[in-house]
Length: 242
Image (tube, rainbow, N blue to C red):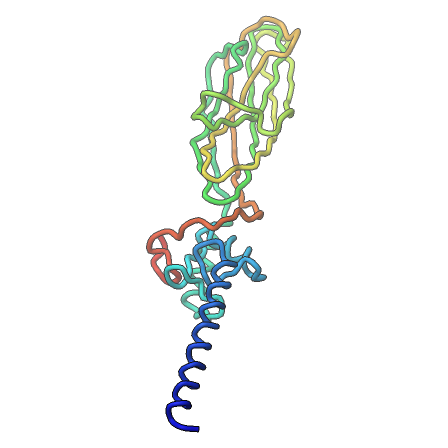
C-alpha cells in the first residue's frame, strides 16, 4: 500500500471516530433534560441527583457537569453531610402571643405565623391550641388554617378537620386543640394560623379573652420535582456554604 493511500485510510478512520463520538455525545445530551449533560434521564442515579440539587446538597463539579463517576474526598463528604443535615432539619414556625377579646362571629384568625417559601418539596404539620374565656353560653370551633396571599384569604389545612368546645358559665374558659397537615408547593409563600368560628346554635355570648399557641413543623417531602432548577451561584461542590 502506498503512502498516499495509507494516509487516506488513517484520515478516514479518524473522521469516523470523531463522527461516532459526536453522535454519542449528541444522544447523551438529548437524554439529559436539565443542566447536567452527564446525567441522562435514563440513569439510575438521575432522580437522586435531582433530589440533592433541589435541596442544595450538591451543585455539580463544574458548569453543566455533575461528574457522577468522580471520587469524593473526606472534605467534600463533610460538606455534603452538612448540607444534607440542614435540608432534613425541620423548620419551626411558632406564635403564642394571642390575648384579648374576640368577636368570633367574624371568624378571626389568631396566632398567625411568619411566612415560609419552600425551595424544594416540603410538608407542614400544624398544631394549634386556643383557649377562650366566654361571657356566657357559647359553642365555638377552631381550625388550623393557611394562607398563600399574606393573610387576605385563609383555607383549612386539611379540608375538613376541626375541634369544638362549649362554654356555658360566664367567665369560664374552654380549650380546643387540633393538628392539621398540608403539602407545600415550591415557590409558594405560606403562613399559618388558628381560625375560630361560632358553631351553629352556639349562643350569642362574646369571647372576653383568649390565649392561643401554634407550632408548625415544616419537613422534607421526598417526591422529586423535575426539571432540575439552575445551580445557585458559587455553589459547586467544595465551595463555601452560603
